[in-house]
Length: 117
Image (cartoon, rainbow, N blue to C red; front, top):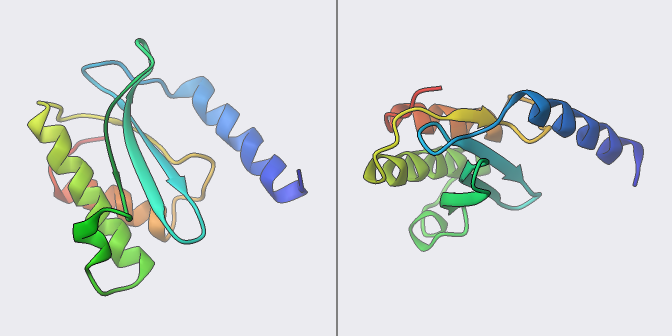
Protein backbone atom coordinates (compact mmCIF):
# COMPACT_ATOMS: atom_id res chain seq x y z
CA UNK A 1 0.00 0.00 0.00
CA UNK A 2 1.14 3.52 -0.68
CA UNK A 3 1.14 6.31 1.91
CA UNK A 4 -2.14 7.85 0.75
CA UNK A 5 -4.16 4.64 1.03
CA UNK A 6 -2.49 3.74 4.35
CA UNK A 7 -3.44 7.14 5.73
CA UNK A 8 -7.04 6.73 4.54
CA UNK A 9 -7.17 3.24 6.07
CA UNK A 10 -6.06 4.61 9.47
CA UNK A 11 -8.67 7.36 9.26
CA UNK A 12 -11.35 4.74 8.42
CA UNK A 13 -10.41 2.66 11.46
CA UNK A 14 -10.59 5.71 13.74
CA UNK A 15 -14.02 6.63 12.37
CA UNK A 16 -15.30 3.07 12.82
CA UNK A 17 -14.19 3.08 16.48
CA UNK A 18 -16.64 5.91 17.11
CA UNK A 19 -19.41 5.21 14.57
CA UNK A 20 -21.68 2.17 14.69
CA UNK A 21 -25.16 1.65 13.29
CA UNK A 22 -28.14 -0.17 14.78
CA UNK A 23 -31.42 -1.18 13.12
CA UNK A 24 -33.24 2.02 14.21
CA UNK A 25 -30.28 4.28 13.40
CA UNK A 26 -28.11 2.58 10.74
CA UNK A 27 -24.71 3.69 9.49
CA UNK A 28 -24.73 5.49 6.13
CA UNK A 29 -21.43 4.22 4.71
CA UNK A 30 -19.92 5.93 1.66
CA UNK A 31 -17.45 4.34 -0.75
CA UNK A 32 -15.96 6.57 -3.42
CA UNK A 33 -14.14 5.13 -6.42
CA UNK A 34 -12.60 7.18 -9.22
CA UNK A 35 -15.65 6.83 -11.45
CA UNK A 36 -18.60 5.99 -9.19
CA UNK A 37 -19.90 6.42 -5.65
CA UNK A 38 -21.75 3.89 -3.52
CA UNK A 39 -23.74 4.21 -0.28
CA UNK A 40 -25.15 1.59 2.07
CA UNK A 41 -27.36 1.66 5.14
CA UNK A 42 -25.73 -0.84 7.50
CA UNK A 43 -26.98 -2.39 10.75
CA UNK A 44 -23.69 -3.23 12.48
CA UNK A 45 -25.32 -5.23 15.29
CA UNK A 46 -26.65 -7.87 12.87
CA UNK A 47 -24.00 -7.23 10.20
CA UNK A 48 -26.68 -6.60 7.58
CA UNK A 49 -27.03 -4.12 4.74
CA UNK A 50 -30.54 -2.65 4.89
CA UNK A 51 -30.44 -0.64 1.65
CA UNK A 52 -27.93 0.53 -0.93
CA UNK A 53 -27.66 2.97 -3.81
CA UNK A 54 -24.96 3.86 -6.30
CA UNK A 55 -24.22 6.08 -9.26
CA UNK A 56 -24.40 2.94 -11.44
CA UNK A 57 -28.21 2.77 -11.08
CA UNK A 58 -29.98 3.11 -14.44
CA UNK A 59 -31.95 6.26 -13.54
CA UNK A 60 -28.80 8.02 -12.26
CA UNK A 61 -26.56 6.87 -15.14
CA UNK A 62 -29.11 8.26 -17.60
CA UNK A 63 -28.73 11.75 -16.12
CA UNK A 64 -26.27 14.19 -17.61
CA UNK A 65 -24.05 16.05 -15.18
CA UNK A 66 -20.89 16.04 -13.15
CA UNK A 67 -19.92 13.38 -10.61
CA UNK A 68 -20.88 15.77 -7.79
CA UNK A 69 -24.38 16.26 -9.25
CA UNK A 70 -24.81 12.49 -9.63
CA UNK A 71 -23.66 12.02 -6.02
CA UNK A 72 -26.47 14.29 -4.86
CA UNK A 73 -28.94 12.10 -6.78
CA UNK A 74 -27.48 9.03 -5.03
CA UNK A 75 -28.07 10.77 -1.68
CA UNK A 76 -31.69 11.44 -2.62
CA UNK A 77 -32.09 7.81 -3.75
CA UNK A 78 -30.80 6.36 -0.47
CA UNK A 79 -33.01 8.76 1.50
CA UNK A 80 -36.06 7.55 -0.45
CA UNK A 81 -35.17 3.90 0.21
CA UNK A 82 -34.64 4.67 3.90
CA UNK A 83 -38.02 6.36 4.29
CA UNK A 84 -39.67 3.32 2.62
CA UNK A 85 -38.04 1.20 5.36
CA UNK A 86 -39.24 3.65 8.03
CA UNK A 87 -35.76 4.99 8.83
CA UNK A 88 -35.46 8.72 9.57
CA UNK A 89 -32.11 9.08 11.37
CA UNK A 90 -28.71 7.70 10.35
CA UNK A 91 -25.06 7.93 11.39
CA UNK A 92 -22.84 9.26 8.60
CA UNK A 93 -19.63 7.32 7.82
CA UNK A 94 -17.51 9.15 5.27
CA UNK A 95 -15.21 6.14 4.85
CA UNK A 96 -11.94 7.99 5.38
CA UNK A 97 -12.69 10.55 2.65
CA UNK A 98 -12.73 14.26 3.30
CA UNK A 99 -16.19 15.74 3.89
CA UNK A 100 -15.98 17.68 0.65
CA UNK A 101 -17.09 17.40 -2.96
CA UNK A 102 -18.86 14.13 -3.77
CA UNK A 103 -19.06 12.94 -0.16
CA UNK A 104 -20.62 16.24 0.94
CA UNK A 105 -23.04 16.08 -2.03
CA UNK A 106 -24.26 12.65 -0.84
CA UNK A 107 -24.89 14.05 2.64
CA UNK A 108 -26.71 17.11 1.26
CA UNK A 109 -28.87 14.92 -1.00
CA UNK A 110 -29.73 12.58 1.87
CA UNK A 111 -30.68 15.55 4.08
CA UNK A 112 -32.87 16.96 1.30
CA UNK A 113 -34.54 13.55 1.03
CA UNK A 114 -35.50 13.74 4.71
CA UNK A 115 -32.74 11.86 6.55
CA UNK A 116 -31.34 13.34 9.75
CA UNK A 117 -27.76 12.92 11.01
